[in-house]
Image (cartoon, rainbow, N blue to C red; front, top):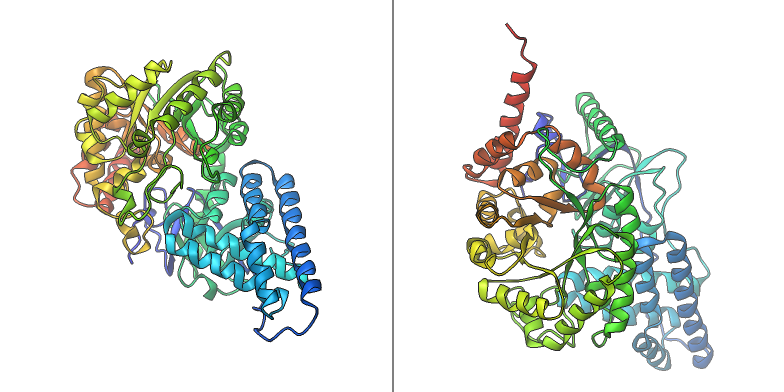
Length: 577
C-alpha cells in the first residue's frame, strides 16, 4: 500500500523515506535506536492435570484477584486516561463469567494456567468477531491472561525493556499497563506491528504526546540497536536513514519543540483573525492537561465513557456528577458536549440493535437515541443541571444527523429541556450539502471529519484494507467542508471541526480557508496548530483552500498545499530590488 504523506512530514520535504508504513499517531517524529520488546510468555501445554482440582481452583482465582489489584495499583500510579483503561482491565480479571469458565475447565481436568489461557482466548475470539472497537479490546484481554499466568508461574510479567539511553520501542502490540507507564525521558517513539488507530496503544500514545506508528507490517523485523526515523505525521518508519534524512528529522524535531515552547496565546491567524483552539476530551480527567496546553475550551466532550461498560443507562444523578467535574475545570469557557454516540463500533445492549449487517449505516448516534428518547432526555437533563452554577458556556450537539428534520428534532428537544445552545454534527454528506437548512434551526454545526471521510468515500474507518481512503485531505471531503463553511457564513453561525483533521497543522489552515471558525483536537496537537495558524493570513488560507479543492486526489491536495506554501515562502525570502 502506498502511504500518503502530509506536509510537515519528511517525505514532503524531498527526503526519501523507505520501508515500513502504518497508521501514524500524533504529528511528531523521532530518531533513535530500536529496542524490541520481549515476546509473550509461551502458552501453557494442554496436558492432563492430576492434582487437587479444588486447590488449583483456589490458587487460580487468587491469581486473578492479585492481577486485578496490580492493575488497579498501576492505574493509580499512572492517573488520567491511563487509569480508566487499567481499571477496565482490572474488571476483566474480576469478570465472574471468566472465573466460572476457569473453574469449570479445571474441574474438567486441566491446569489453572491452561484454564486461564483458554478462557481468555475464548472471550478474545468473541470480541474479535464483533469487529471495530470491540475487536481492539481483545488485545487487552490477552494482556490480562499473560499477567495471571505470570502470577501462577511466579515469574515477572513480560514488560517494557530497560535502557540507559533513549530508544524507539518496537513491539507486536503494547498492553495498556505498559503504555501507561512509558518513561517519557527514554521512549522517543512507539512502533507496533499490531493494533490500529483506535487501539489503546494509539489512544494512550496520543494522550501522552508520544509519536507512534501502529499496525506497521514488518515492524518486528527491525534490527535491535539500529537507528530509525519514526515520522508519525506520515505514518512511516525509515529503517535505513541517510545522514541527510537524520539531519532533516532532527531539524524538524527541534522546530516542533520550539513551537511547543512558544507562549500560549489564543488561536489566531497572522492578520489577527481569531480561530479559537479547543480540545477534544473523553473524560473529566483530560481537563487538566488540556488547560495546561492552552485549550480555550472544549470542542468535543465525548460522553460514551459513562455508558460503554454499563448494563443499563446511567441515572441522571450519576451523569450529573461526572459532567459537573469537567464543567468546573472550564468555568467561563465554552464546552461543547456530544450526546451519546453509540452504535457501529460502540454497541450498547440497552440502546443499539443486534444483528445489523452494516451497523455503520444503521441505527447509531441520534438514530438510536430517537428510538430510546428517555435516554436522550435523561442525558440532556443531567447536562443542564450539571452546568448550573459552574459558569460554563454549555453547547450541546447531536451525532449522526442526516438532514434538517433530524436537526430540528434534536434542537427542539434540547431547548425544551433547557439547553441554551443546541447544534448538530456534520458527519454524513447529506448534512454537509443541507447545512444551511440545518442551520435554520441549529445554533451551530461541528464537522466530524473522521466519519465524514468514511461516508464520503464509502470506506469503513475500522477496516485496514481500505485505510488509504480514510484521508481528510481528499478533495471530495474538503468540498463538503466548504459547503458547511458557506452555510455558516450565510447564517452567521459557528462552524467547527472536531475530527482528527483539525490536528494536522497545514490542513487546519485549509479548513479555516474553507470557512471553519473553530478547531478542536487532541490537546497534544494544540501547540503545532497554533504555531502554523500564525504563519498565514485569512486571505492566504482562502487561497490555499481554493488550490487544494481543485486537486483530484488527496495526495494531489497535499502536494498542492505544499507547493503553494513553498512558493509563498520563497517570495517572502527573495531579496528586494
